[in-house]
Amino acid sequence: MITHHSPVQFQTKLPEEVDVLIIGGGIIGISTAWFLRQSGLKVLVCDKGRVAGEQSSRNWGWIRQQGRDEAELPIMMESVSIWRELTEQGINTGFHQGGSLYLCENQAQLERYNDFLGFAAKHKLDTQQLNSEQLYALLNNTPKHWRSALYTPNDGRAEPATAVPDLARACVQEAVLISENCAVDYLSITNQTIDGVQTERGYVKCSRVLVCAGHWSARLLHEVGIKLPQLSVKASVARTARAPLLFNGNASGSNLAFRRRLDGGYTVAMSDYLEVFPSVHSLKQASAFLPLLRSAAEKLKLRVYEESACVNPFDNDADYKKIAANRVLNPQPTTAALKRMRNRLDQVLPAMRGIPIVESWAGMIDATPDAVPVMDAVDSLDGLFIATGFSGHGFGIGPAAGKIMSGQIQGHTSEHDLSRFRFSRFNDGSELRLGPSI
Ligand SMILES: Cc1cc2nc3c(=O)[nH]c(=O)nc-3n(C[C@H](O)[C@H](O)[C@H](O)COP(=O)(O)OP(=O)(O)OC[C@H]3O[C@@H](n4cnc5c(N)ncnc54)[C@H](O)[C@@H]3O)c2cc1C
Image (cartoon, rainbow, N blue to C red):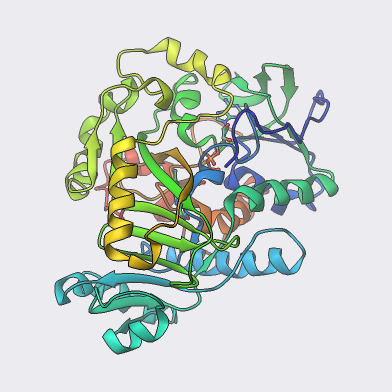
């Protein structure tokens, strides 16, 4: 996990002018820079803290096609190929295709995925239903707690804390400029056209700006009168010491999710424990979020305020000023969630009893009302692009999202249908269709 204590690795001298300025050095910003690197455009990525300091190093590391929204699926399938290519090109991703399992205790749980199975087949994704015998042929050292599973063998995993910084290093080798500890304070606009950005280290002239600032995107856009509905959701995670091999991929079920790590341990989390922090902005758009909140009610816990989560429902302007002050948003993991996780681990996976948890952390997920991202140009502001709101599943799809945004910034038409990810869906009167999950 990367924090504000992690060394600064990217500190280019700020240029006076670039063609494209990317706000946010998470998986989305760095992947976009990667696909722009050979475009002939001069690209600068600014991050207020560290590359991948926030969600992009704190996530579970699942590269999951299984269970995706239908519109995301073809993009996600391309992303798996890109992860493979990046790894073959020597980027230290830790990518491994060990598959994903959704472990089911009964038939009703398995049937929840019937719709997905239908369109997975249409897209020729090799997702299968496993019976108990097939499932336990894949699992080691696990009691027969589950009866069946949904399985996608070519799903992958990667190591978030190394993958994105290493891709950033590869970008720099190909002339992309990256500046850490460089918060963007505001976008500079003349006649509804972007003309530059003001950073804490000076003004940079540019005509194209991509906002991919994760948890902070809505606040940054709010400053220029653009309303992005965004909800902040805290997720607590832990990693164990080296442990016996249970499954060499990603598995989730019985409220527990675990993913084999390259270091031989597991990244572990409660799949049913997410904490929602309303902000001034999300409260104003509360009605947009009601369907999502209702659909995920079992796993969501409402929280009012927590200093380390940096979402304050009573604090309006001061909120924005905290952007630079929060170099790396480092919410504290919730003790109750960690305790439940440990108990669940010991109950469900006896082979993990006595294996210590060696690190725990939390991350703030930025969710949209329909739990699918925005990847779009903003019609009302010439030169502004948004790629945010990846809603708990942006790491795996990040490389393909970066390719899409690189194309949009260069004015190319995507081979993917991006209508589901248009920014205008939040205010053009269309009915929002909920994606499968946060
Ligand atoms: C606990 C957890 C588990 C998850 N598990 C998975 C998973 O297994 N698989 C999966 O696919 N996804 C997962 N996700 C989701 C995934 O991590 C995110 O969707 C993805 O990382 C989002 O990337 P991003 O680049 O949009 O945002 P971020 O990684 O949050 O990056 C945004 C960056 O913008 C910077 N920034 C913000 N404001 C400014 C500013 N004003 N100026 C300059 N820089 C700024 C920040 O410092 C930050 O580095 C998980 C998320 C969490 C929190």
